[in-house]
Image (cartoon, rainbow, N blue to C red):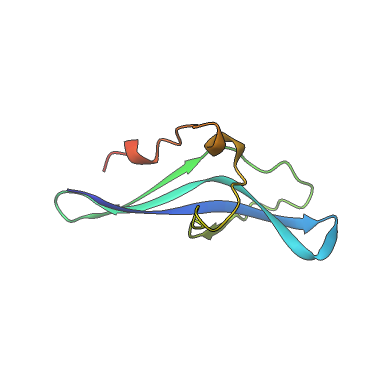
Length: 90
């Protein structure tokens, strides 16, 4: 049996309404897991890239927010979009 830990890949840009805070947009997932042999595997799935004048190639990785306590910021999740996170073979 494989085990997985999923992290969100995000880009932080200046929030135009609050310049002292950053706005993070999600652009994919990073999956840490082990296969049946116990070998560690890391997989990266990018769903988009930021189109922003400040984008310099760097993205940030964060643990997913608890869906029960946070608002859903990804419209694809609300529509039942399959991210394929459970389809990654190790």
